[in-house]
Image 1 (spheres, rainbow, N blue to C red):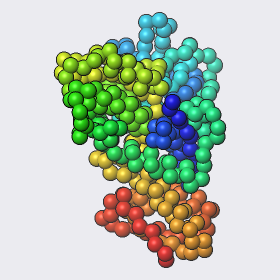
Image 2 (cartoon, helix red, strand yellow):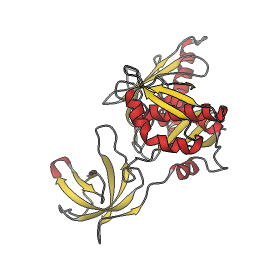
Image 3 (cartoon, helix red, strand yellow):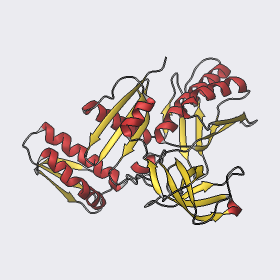
Length: 346
């Protein structure tokens, strides 16, 4: 039977939750002080209708103080009027170049307002792990950094041999199954690898926060479509409602659609080119300084980083000083990449 555990880390400028599945990271829930509280799954409120795009079957609405949100139009909805009010719930947070998406609840009354905030990190952890309290402290930070390391990987080993490569394009996420060095009957080995790939990919896709169209390039031929479909339904059951699984094509491809909810957490960590974002690197710098500072109470520390990271660190500086005291300095090194951080005794 699978076991899930929760971890909660409260660092300087970040609150992070981790859910593990049988010891491997399955979800990473991140909250930073500058996050838009209205751009998150679960926010409910009365919004103003900004525009109606009937040709595209949608409208743009906005909660007070929030960005425009896409509201799909459906035949059973009342006729909407520009400038009118609707009660909505955010179903999908914005991502990269896409607006947040809401669902229609009812016609709005009164003034535009927020009726319910999005659940916080601790509430989300309780939703995923019902029993016990989250582990905190250094063990929680270790779980966070293990989850981040997994998110930044592309290739993941399968139990019993072989691996899957998970890569994302603008249109879809591909999962390429490789048999690797599995021994024995080729058909049986392929079946076992494909079955294992469904479980590993389901965990990793949840961890990265990826949804939309997912295509598995299965290994081998003559697949047992019924068995693989049942295995896929079981592996992706935690992502329901909204999972749709197609039939295996004659080319050995299994397509499915997964619901998009939160902003993909990988977008916080790296940019489109795969380089660390400055805000993420600044938080990594803060963690290193805090670790070193606690290991050497009273010692002075000197840190060096890229200019963009130093700029992002400015909002964390006061919070770290409250924890350690003003016994550290941070300087910029032109030409350094965001993932290069050095901390030493001053």
